[in-house]
Image (cartoon, rainbow, N blue to C red; front, top):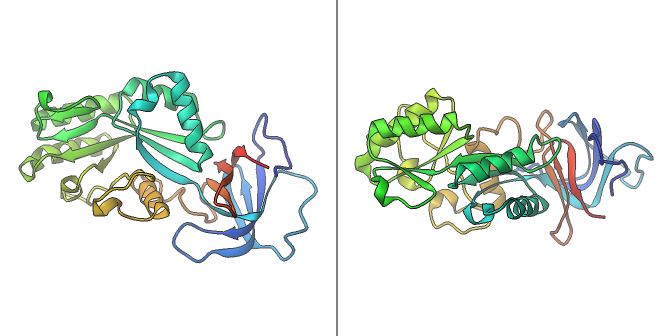
Length: 288
């Protein structure tokens, strides 16, 4: 139940009354909680002595029969879904309705992915929040040996050039795969260039995760709904989501329900269905 209209500008203050709150950080759930959101940020979390006594005015989400948890961060190879603007917008709306508030679009042509990011715009208007990776970078492969959606890095110069071009194209994150341990120098050239461009770079296979290029190891982006036999992604869905938040460099802003963090959250009913999705304090979808 939403007790204020979200048809125009989102309300500056929103209150969520939750039967159960899951902070998303692995900590214990708590019962009967009140969450206050101001300008898209969680400013207060407190116990409610009488959850039946709802405010009679203001913007309110009634989740007295559900669990409130952080929105999910997903990572999807989306080439088939971006064949047309209609298909892309329907696909991203379905992801949002399933509780995904942050979405990394992986290994796809830049044009459709960037157009989808422009369509979504800022999170205060439409969601989910989109991160574009562009083509998968494959260190140690010749151009003739990589399929569509990938880019070959065949020497250190090509690695620097590819990363520079993708930075100029305004991608948000790069994904790197390493063909063999002998290709470490090429892979590290890509990592070094990404850091010079202040661009996030993540691993796409175990060899990339094992890289040591003068700093911390690369993290992984893992799809939430696809089984992955590699240990890096063989975790429960909420843990994968939090790992994706960290890989995207958002761990100090979202992914958990703490005061001072962005108000990205979902209300999940007792039957496990998503009831309401809130992104940066704006109600994106809600079912009675």
